[in-house]
Length: 590
Image (cartoon, helix red, strand yellow):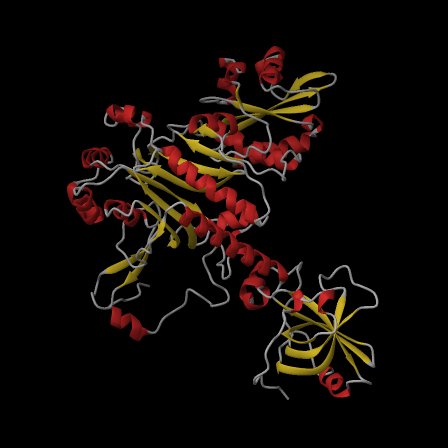
């Protein structure tokens, strides 16, 4: 028979009880984590969000409470009245291990079915099962810790932004569809048949309008939505710290975000030091093969194209450059391991992978017959290979206009081998600003140069004259913040002058009709005295994931979706009633 809560009031949380609470009469409430029946003595471990405390039921002294405890099972919801006593022998594995609660009364508030997996810190249940039964998964200590850390980080961010004079302003969730780089989630209007709202991919236009409106310093912890193709560790809805400032220099924005990140890291017990180093985009690509380089280990890339004679290039079908790096201690790799590495290179877009071993007996190479012994030695020397190292070189299968395709391939191999060889120092926290991005990137599908960021990204002043003649040489005023090889966020100084904005739109081939349809209200706003402004957006989910030491965003989001954008618990997306579709004037196309 279940009990009612009535006027019973909890006095303490389970995980907060300590030796100082000895002899106190208390009331705790929570779930039964474990049950151990030793006859006259019956033990229940009671759990709430703060932890676990052991409760003992004595059949001789409290027979009624003991009889009630015999009915309790795992995950039953209970309230316990009792007295705190010191244990004869402390349990060092529990924070409350010095004490236990001697029960005088047990209230069973609800029963429970047997859960599909144990409610423990480390479990082997498949992620799909955990997401389907998320309400059970959330009872585990690790999700509690992650969500509590997320709360503290977001709270610290808000405090920091407030102290720096920023105002949090909410922007609309229902807005108009504008191109932001991914597909919009569309919301049909019942009142205006045939018309749609869009969920914002970011508050980009609204935060720029806030600068036009004189708000000067804006921020927001905001939900954003992107209908992207299936990608690992991406969520269709995500949270970001959105920031915009009027009259800023680039370093002003960097200073704000560095302050935010130093304090966010401190909340997680991690020491970060500002200012963060800067690196040009082109240098990051050529040295690390990535625009989000992981600086926790070396293995830098080198252009070794000169080590490949023209005859060798022809036979190996090499176009463009060849990039290489030295993998410490990997000269012992077997033929099978090198073949596996070659396959990984090809899956990363390589035309071929070429290896040079710096062994104690001398330099050997898989392409020795083609490039010659001297070139193999030179290649190892350029990469700084030491005895015992393996030099890995790669060329690209397809060249990419505006970037170094071979470096991008080698960069992926660098990351894979850095992890496999234990080169990455996981105790380090390496922040980095990437600047000097190209304003345009080549679209193979459209066979033209397109905007690499959103079309309001500022242009480096001295590159304006190249906008129409050589757009691939134009640099943007964009920047990214990187941490340990992960992009935390992107931003830019914006275009605030209408004449420059119109020139960029023309360079992108947009007609006046297209501009009015997509950005009409914003273009009108630009004509009313727009101040110089700029900002950035940081991914809160990714920040918390890294600071919590997790490898998946889903571990720090309360109700996450799968990589297929499905909420397994709520069974969403789902069909809707025909009546709802009729009200919206929508027919489902088979």
